[in-house]
Image (cartoon, rainbow, N blue to C red):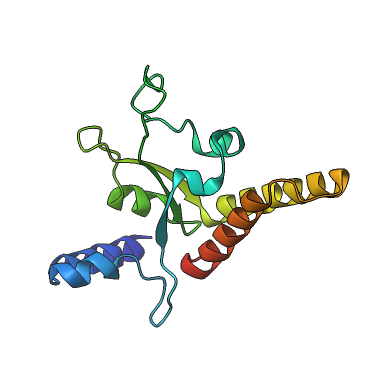
Length: 156
């Protein structure tokens, strides 16, 4: 355990000494030569309407507010960080919720995101089989595309 922590500390020190451009990308690499990253950032709306995604992501307004406010036209730029299954702390370190900057993130593991998408894509397809036509074809396609993007972009 001590050797593992010491190795991580040395790696962090070495990364801190690198030029900024390398530091920005090196922390997010899964493995050498892989296009996949430890984290990828998506829009809240990519995960479907709040009635679908709200249980997993929380409300679509700022997490530091008790409610969305009085202006129904107000849009909140909430991002979803999908991270490798064992990298939540790392994701939270690099994507920090900051009310002053209006930076709000929700953190979801690769497994949570893909399971959520599998479940909801299946639900939408089952709805289509019941009514004989494709219910919510754009939403089904968007969720299917998001799942493919996550699988391509994020380490499991």
